[in-house]
Length: 231
Image (cartoon, rainbow, N blue to C red; front, side):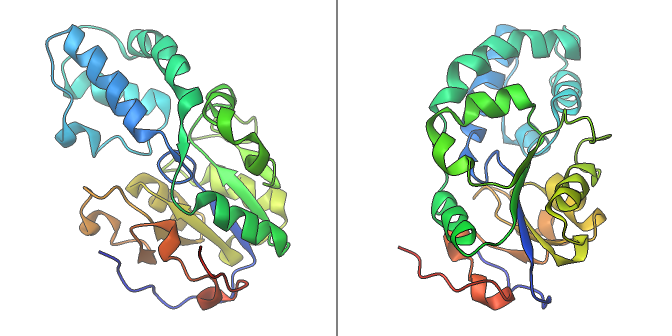
């Protein structure tokens, strides 16, 4: 359920996570990881998945290999995974409200950026069906950006986005679907609204400034942004 938003001042810029927030890619990650697990007689279930949402590729691979006791290295896991992902990513669909909110903010000249744990290559694959509205973002910051030193939950990705937008971190709002992403946003000194997977417990987002179950539950006017009447 939605959790009340904590009070925060007027927002001057908005930074979006991508996977599971703007694009519905988490199902792809689940399908592919399950396929790899099954090759080795293992089962990839929610007890493991809930702990990898929002992790960078290397961190995720290390966790999955250890949690499932796979007889391969994290590097081998990523090599096996890559072609399976590449085949599926271009079919990724937008999450409810994502395109509408992005277009609304852009139309009102609100600085917007993407801050994602994805690489630049996988970003391109995932946005295949959505090039037009992703072109509206002022900046795209990926995990392999040369200015990003560490992946989420470190704040680097979001701090890089804020710096390029020219907006102080305390004036930025971040939308995230993962606890790791919320941790990164708060470490950056930003306001963070969590929009978790329906199966995730709210307790994992106690450090967020609010919890919504969909972007369409967001009321921009409540934080000083131009009002939006959702369609």
